[in-house]
Length: 323
Image (cartoon, rainbow, N blue to C red; front, side):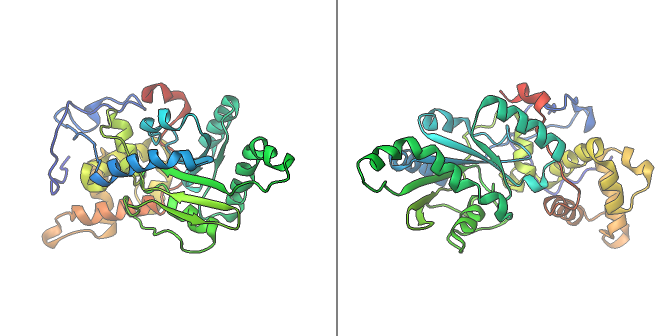
């Protein structure tokens, strides 16, 4: 198997083992090593400090996670900071997640008694449930104002979560205008702004924040493939190897149909399979040489656009690997 090496990988660690699926490193060969997957630019540390200062003004936290990685997208640095606040978990991009796995997660969170919603920031129907749920959580506190004949204060919400999880898109939908900047790459929002959603609702938009060191390599790969970490931190070559392996295990038919592959192609090693996709898509340089950057870009773009089917990476039966 010939793997592309156009992107340097630094900070190498021991041979990667996929924790969630228990797949040993022979997938990529015994010499394959992965980088430390860490991305914590200065604006994240600053944002975390500012977020802590704003907490006392906030009534309800809207903590956004990716529905495809509901465990891997937990920022444990927030847990202690936010535990004294009312909180709703919003699992966004549910339209890209495997429906059967989402049902399993729904049962788990229902059993835990945690307020949550699986949403899609592009689906207004599901978003319409958020504010009523927030108001219901405030009923007891607001009742003291009602008994005294006083109008309760504005409902103050804070949106938190990892980068590129859809916070700004959610805010724009809730406010029904472009109140927050959006983009396909992580790290678009770098400032914290209060946004009025109506006469009695204010919402604080916060930048996506990761944690300083991602210890679990599988979680790091999942965060990167779903867009929370810049592709360049890992390298598109390794990302495509990982994605193709997962697709081979979970949805080979979708892969075969989209790229018009032969049934036997599905059993190729990821690097060889990528080259077969390159041939099918005409990603060739002069002399028939594989254009790795081009085919890698196509594969990642197709996946993120949902063309490769609905795929969940965190499975309920493997949550112990991310504790």
